[in-house]
Length: 380
Image (cartoon, rainbow, N blue to C red; front, side, top):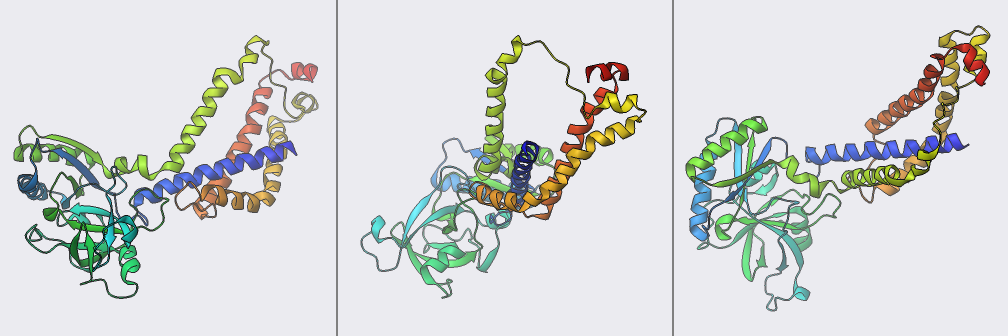
């Protein structure tokens, strides 16, 4: 019973680990996040005190220069990328509102000032309408692209294009609708988001560069190109996968930290009492000495040692439904798109548990077989 319980707990941990790995893969693939981070490099640029229109013109110059790099398929700029820090969450009001207090707002939305082509570089699909342009400036009427949740919350089934809302006390027209995404972390509920022209909200921005080049090559090309536009410019480069990991993967990271903490506790004090004990040889498995003295071959002894744990692993399949239900409840709270019933997770868990069980039984048996059979017989 103890061995079956240990196998069940081990299987639960293995399943949880595989679900976390699967979650990481889904996150990095951009599934349901509204972005496609594969092949994207982020370039954070310090413009050295430039602001307002001067900063905007320099950003436009850099975007055009980067677009000319061979292998670059799209490039844009955004104030902050989704799931980064700090967040820009702004109250949104319906037309006709006169009191701009939090209680009078229709919703709160993540707001992303961006350049033309940012959505293409990020892999965010425009479902309806148009992208922003450099002609959307401070002197022109404010416009915005909203996501599906934003449009559905304010206007229901009514077409969002051409509708208006108040953002920062200015009437803003919807010119496009994009797919929903994740803006704070992977576990958040659907949230409203609005993308406004960078030219109407000038300031610092991050270049988002999509290319077919390996990260090392595009990074070197970006440093050369941006340095030619702005000598001695300070550029921080990282892939979008690297930028996403701290915010997008709380489940796997937390699991790694917890595992590490438990290991350190055991190493620091859990086995302290063993230091004062005489080392003892591990007892032979399954009467190896008696079997060999009676003429059993080594393969037969190993098979006998492996057989019982393997049978227990097979019998433990009855607990699979319970484990799946428990894993779904626990992991669903901390891991993005947790699905213990995923075929990849199930196959991986079965193979991992089989490998653990066979190795755990076979290795001690093989160690025992390396000892003289008469000595094994005396010990037993």
